[in-house]
Length: 235
Image (cartoon, rainbow, N blue to C red; front, side, top):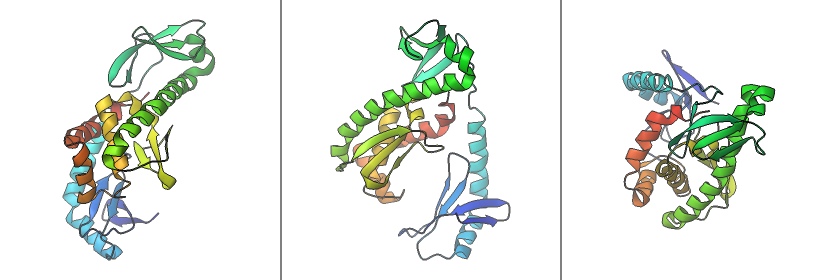
Protein backbone atom coordinates (compact mmCIF):
# COMPACT_ATOMS: atom_id res chain seq x y z
CA UNK A 1 0.00 0.00 0.00
CA UNK A 2 1.55 3.27 -1.17
CA UNK A 3 0.77 5.88 1.51
CA UNK A 4 1.96 9.44 0.97
CA UNK A 5 1.59 12.69 2.90
CA UNK A 6 1.14 16.24 1.66
CA UNK A 7 1.35 18.56 4.68
CA UNK A 8 -1.39 17.20 6.98
CA UNK A 9 -3.19 15.16 4.30
CA UNK A 10 -2.39 11.45 4.20
CA UNK A 11 -3.52 9.65 1.07
CA UNK A 12 -3.23 6.30 -0.65
CA UNK A 13 -1.67 6.47 -4.10
CA UNK A 14 -3.37 3.97 -6.41
CA UNK A 15 -2.03 2.58 -9.69
CA UNK A 16 -2.36 4.97 -12.62
CA UNK A 17 -5.25 4.93 -15.08
CA UNK A 18 -5.52 5.81 -18.80
CA UNK A 19 -7.49 8.94 -17.89
CA UNK A 20 -5.90 12.35 -18.38
CA UNK A 21 -7.13 13.67 -15.02
CA UNK A 22 -6.45 12.64 -11.43
CA UNK A 23 -9.29 10.98 -9.51
CA UNK A 24 -9.45 11.92 -5.80
CA UNK A 25 -11.98 10.02 -3.67
CA UNK A 26 -12.98 10.15 0.01
CA UNK A 27 -13.70 6.48 0.71
CA UNK A 28 -16.46 5.28 3.05
CA UNK A 29 -13.91 4.72 5.84
CA UNK A 30 -12.56 8.27 5.48
CA UNK A 31 -9.42 7.35 3.55
CA UNK A 32 -8.29 9.66 0.78
CA UNK A 33 -7.36 7.73 -2.37
CA UNK A 34 -5.74 9.21 -5.45
CA UNK A 35 -5.60 7.59 -8.88
CA UNK A 36 -3.43 9.68 -11.25
CA UNK A 37 -2.86 9.36 -14.99
CA UNK A 38 -0.66 6.38 -15.74
CA UNK A 39 2.40 8.49 -16.64
CA UNK A 40 2.37 10.63 -13.47
CA UNK A 41 5.19 10.50 -10.95
CA UNK A 42 4.38 10.36 -7.23
CA UNK A 43 5.60 13.93 -6.95
CA UNK A 44 3.12 15.05 -9.59
CA UNK A 45 0.35 13.33 -7.62
CA UNK A 46 1.49 15.20 -4.50
CA UNK A 47 1.20 18.45 -6.44
CA UNK A 48 -2.38 17.65 -7.46
CA UNK A 49 -3.30 16.83 -3.84
CA UNK A 50 -1.75 20.14 -2.76
CA UNK A 51 -3.79 22.03 -5.36
CA UNK A 52 -6.99 20.29 -4.19
CA UNK A 53 -6.25 20.72 -0.48
CA UNK A 54 -9.29 22.89 0.30
CA UNK A 55 -11.60 20.52 -1.60
CA UNK A 56 -10.21 17.57 0.38
CA UNK A 57 -10.60 19.40 3.71
CA UNK A 58 -14.19 20.31 2.88
CA UNK A 59 -15.13 16.77 1.85
CA UNK A 60 -13.41 15.18 4.85
CA UNK A 61 -15.38 17.51 7.13
CA UNK A 62 -18.58 16.50 5.37
CA UNK A 63 -17.65 12.82 5.74
CA UNK A 64 -17.18 13.29 9.49
CA UNK A 65 -20.57 15.01 9.78
CA UNK A 66 -22.32 12.23 7.86
CA UNK A 67 -20.73 9.48 9.92
CA UNK A 68 -21.49 11.23 13.20
CA UNK A 69 -25.11 10.30 12.49
CA UNK A 70 -24.40 6.57 12.58
CA UNK A 71 -26.99 4.84 14.75
CA UNK A 72 -26.12 2.68 17.77
CA UNK A 73 -28.94 0.19 18.29
CA UNK A 74 -30.07 -1.55 21.47
CA UNK A 75 -31.51 -5.06 21.76
CA UNK A 76 -34.75 -4.11 23.47
CA UNK A 77 -38.43 -4.20 22.54
CA UNK A 78 -39.36 -1.30 20.28
CA UNK A 79 -35.87 -0.65 18.84
CA UNK A 80 -36.06 0.03 15.11
CA UNK A 81 -34.23 -1.72 12.27
CA UNK A 82 -34.21 -1.05 8.54
CA UNK A 83 -35.01 -3.66 5.91
CA UNK A 84 -35.51 -2.84 2.23
CA UNK A 85 -35.92 0.82 3.08
CA UNK A 86 -38.68 0.31 5.67
CA UNK A 87 -38.45 0.60 9.44
CA UNK A 88 -39.47 -2.35 11.60
CA UNK A 89 -39.63 -2.54 15.39
CA UNK A 90 -37.94 -5.28 17.36
CA UNK A 91 -39.97 -7.71 19.45
CA UNK A 92 -38.21 -10.12 21.80
CA UNK A 93 -40.14 -13.39 21.79
CA UNK A 94 -39.90 -16.77 23.52
CA UNK A 95 -39.25 -20.22 22.06
CA UNK A 96 -38.99 -19.25 18.42
CA UNK A 97 -37.78 -21.96 16.03
CA UNK A 98 -35.41 -19.53 14.32
CA UNK A 99 -33.26 -16.83 15.89
CA UNK A 100 -34.87 -14.07 13.83
CA UNK A 101 -38.06 -13.74 11.80
CA UNK A 102 -39.85 -10.86 10.11
CA UNK A 103 -43.46 -11.44 11.10
CA UNK A 104 -46.56 -9.24 11.18
CA UNK A 105 -44.54 -6.05 10.77
CA UNK A 106 -41.99 -6.85 13.49
CA UNK A 107 -38.50 -8.28 13.61
CA UNK A 108 -39.07 -11.10 16.08
CA UNK A 109 -35.86 -12.07 17.86
CA UNK A 110 -35.72 -15.06 20.17
CA UNK A 111 -34.88 -13.53 23.56
CA UNK A 112 -32.54 -16.45 24.31
CA UNK A 113 -30.18 -15.04 21.66
CA UNK A 114 -29.74 -11.87 23.71
CA UNK A 115 -29.82 -13.54 27.14
CA UNK A 116 -27.34 -16.28 26.29
CA UNK A 117 -25.22 -14.72 23.57
CA UNK A 118 -25.36 -10.97 24.28
CA UNK A 119 -25.43 -8.26 21.62
CA UNK A 120 -22.84 -10.03 19.46
CA UNK A 121 -25.15 -13.01 18.91
CA UNK A 122 -28.13 -10.72 18.30
CA UNK A 123 -26.22 -8.77 15.67
CA UNK A 124 -25.13 -12.01 14.03
CA UNK A 125 -28.78 -13.07 13.79
CA UNK A 126 -29.51 -9.97 11.74
CA UNK A 127 -26.40 -10.42 9.62
CA UNK A 128 -27.42 -14.00 8.83
CA UNK A 129 -30.94 -12.88 7.96
CA UNK A 130 -29.80 -10.08 5.66
CA UNK A 131 -27.21 -12.36 4.04
CA UNK A 132 -29.77 -15.09 3.32
CA UNK A 133 -32.39 -12.69 1.95
CA UNK A 134 -29.77 -10.71 0.07
CA UNK A 135 -28.52 -13.76 -1.80
CA UNK A 136 -31.89 -14.21 -3.50
CA UNK A 137 -32.60 -10.52 -4.10
CA UNK A 138 -29.22 -9.76 -5.62
CA UNK A 139 -29.37 -12.89 -7.75
CA UNK A 140 -32.75 -11.78 -9.10
CA UNK A 141 -31.74 -8.15 -9.70
CA UNK A 142 -28.47 -9.12 -11.37
CA UNK A 143 -30.39 -11.48 -13.65
CA UNK A 144 -32.76 -8.61 -14.53
CA UNK A 145 -30.15 -5.92 -15.17
CA UNK A 146 -27.27 -7.93 -16.66
CA UNK A 147 -28.84 -8.15 -20.17
CA UNK A 148 -29.54 -4.40 -20.08
CA UNK A 149 -25.88 -3.71 -19.30
CA UNK A 150 -24.76 -6.34 -21.79
CA UNK A 151 -22.70 -8.53 -19.45
CA UNK A 152 -22.86 -12.07 -18.03
CA UNK A 153 -21.65 -12.40 -14.42
CA UNK A 154 -20.76 -15.82 -13.09
CA UNK A 155 -22.63 -15.46 -9.82
CA UNK A 156 -23.42 -13.45 -6.69
CA UNK A 157 -22.02 -13.53 -3.15
CA UNK A 158 -23.36 -11.63 -0.14
CA UNK A 159 -20.93 -11.09 2.72
CA UNK A 160 -19.26 -8.48 4.92
CA UNK A 161 -17.47 -6.05 2.61
CA UNK A 162 -16.01 -3.80 5.25
CA UNK A 163 -16.38 -0.20 4.07
CA UNK A 164 -17.41 -1.14 0.54
CA UNK A 165 -20.99 -1.64 -0.62
CA UNK A 166 -20.06 -4.07 -3.36
CA UNK A 167 -17.33 -5.15 -5.76
CA UNK A 168 -16.91 -6.63 -9.19
CA UNK A 169 -14.61 -9.50 -8.27
CA UNK A 170 -12.25 -11.65 -10.25
CA UNK A 171 -13.61 -14.41 -12.41
CA UNK A 172 -16.92 -12.67 -13.07
CA UNK A 173 -18.29 -12.79 -9.51
CA UNK A 174 -20.24 -9.92 -7.96
CA UNK A 175 -19.93 -9.34 -4.22
CA UNK A 176 -22.44 -7.36 -2.16
CA UNK A 177 -22.40 -6.22 1.46
CA UNK A 178 -25.23 -7.63 3.58
CA UNK A 179 -25.87 -4.05 4.77
CA UNK A 180 -27.25 -3.23 1.32
CA UNK A 181 -30.42 -5.08 2.33
CA UNK A 182 -31.31 -2.21 4.65
CA UNK A 183 -31.53 0.20 1.72
CA UNK A 184 -34.64 0.61 -0.41
CA UNK A 185 -35.08 -1.53 -3.55
CA UNK A 186 -34.26 1.45 -5.81
CA UNK A 187 -30.94 1.98 -4.02
CA UNK A 188 -30.17 -1.73 -4.21
CA UNK A 189 -30.84 -1.59 -7.95
CA UNK A 190 -28.37 1.30 -8.26
CA UNK A 191 -25.69 -0.73 -6.47
CA UNK A 192 -26.36 -3.67 -8.80
CA UNK A 193 -26.16 -1.56 -11.97
CA UNK A 194 -23.03 0.18 -10.67
CA UNK A 195 -21.19 -3.12 -10.24
CA UNK A 196 -22.43 -4.59 -13.52
CA UNK A 197 -21.07 -1.57 -15.39
CA UNK A 198 -17.64 -2.27 -13.89
CA UNK A 199 -17.46 -5.24 -16.25
CA UNK A 200 -17.07 -2.62 -18.98
CA UNK A 201 -14.85 -0.17 -17.10
CA UNK A 202 -12.91 -1.01 -13.92
CA UNK A 203 -12.74 2.62 -12.85
CA UNK A 204 -15.03 5.58 -12.29
CA UNK A 205 -14.21 7.40 -15.49
CA UNK A 206 -16.70 9.34 -17.59
CA UNK A 207 -17.04 6.25 -19.78
CA UNK A 208 -18.08 4.21 -16.75
CA UNK A 209 -20.74 6.71 -15.65
CA UNK A 210 -22.03 6.88 -19.21
CA UNK A 211 -22.68 3.14 -19.02
CA UNK A 212 -24.56 3.57 -15.74
CA UNK A 213 -26.57 6.45 -17.23
CA UNK A 214 -27.70 4.32 -20.16
CA UNK A 215 -29.46 1.89 -17.83
CA UNK A 216 -30.35 4.21 -14.96
CA UNK A 217 -30.67 7.88 -15.98
CA UNK A 218 -31.49 8.97 -12.41
CA UNK A 219 -28.42 7.27 -10.92
CA UNK A 220 -27.06 10.57 -9.56
CA UNK A 221 -30.03 10.92 -7.22
CA UNK A 222 -29.64 7.35 -5.97
CA UNK A 223 -25.89 7.72 -5.61
CA UNK A 224 -26.33 10.91 -3.56
CA UNK A 225 -28.87 9.23 -1.27
CA UNK A 226 -26.41 6.43 -0.54
CA UNK A 227 -23.61 8.91 0.14
CA UNK A 228 -25.72 10.89 2.62
CA UNK A 229 -27.52 8.01 4.33
CA UNK A 230 -25.10 5.11 4.14
CA UNK A 231 -23.90 5.58 7.72
CA UNK A 232 -27.41 4.87 9.03
CA UNK A 233 -27.48 1.41 7.42
CA UNK A 234 -26.19 -0.57 10.36
CA UNK A 235 -27.22 -3.02 13.07
